[in-house]
Length: 194
Image (cartoon, rainbow, N blue to C red; front, side):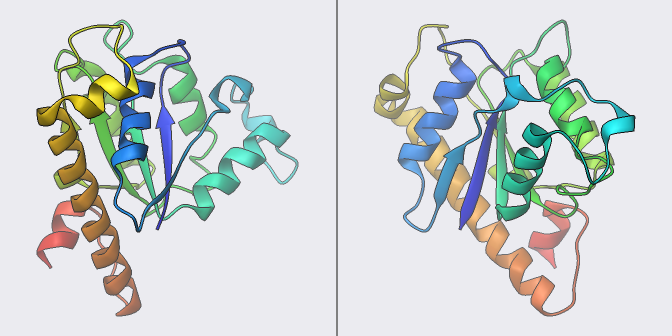
């Protein structure tokens, strides 16, 4: 199961990036998780360039999204919103549709990031991503100086991450089974209750 992990932060040592790296280490064996590292290379979204000849970094981003079975996103909050680089990346896939029906789980490194999470959910709903609430979690990383090892060694956080990833895998499997039966759900919750 191929999972693409996207951090909404470009900051070195970002707690969101560290949370995703811990998720990579704790992921079930069936997962092949890669962390997308090209967010800073994406040009500013320009509808005039949103065509077959899109800039190479955009083509690469779209290709990685398309090849994935699911997407994990962990994002900080800047001024009560989603960081510009992450919103820019999402803007590049509105018309091309790589997130259409794609299972997405949100990992939140701070309970204070409610505005960014709400904004991110709204954008993902507009692009018809399939948000999986059972696999979306908020943890409290108490310091900006956390690393992957400290997250993994915290029993509460590592348990929450493992549980979220297992729920994500189950949701992806169920969505695949439903797709094989000709069914399509608009939300993770309805997919898991059908």
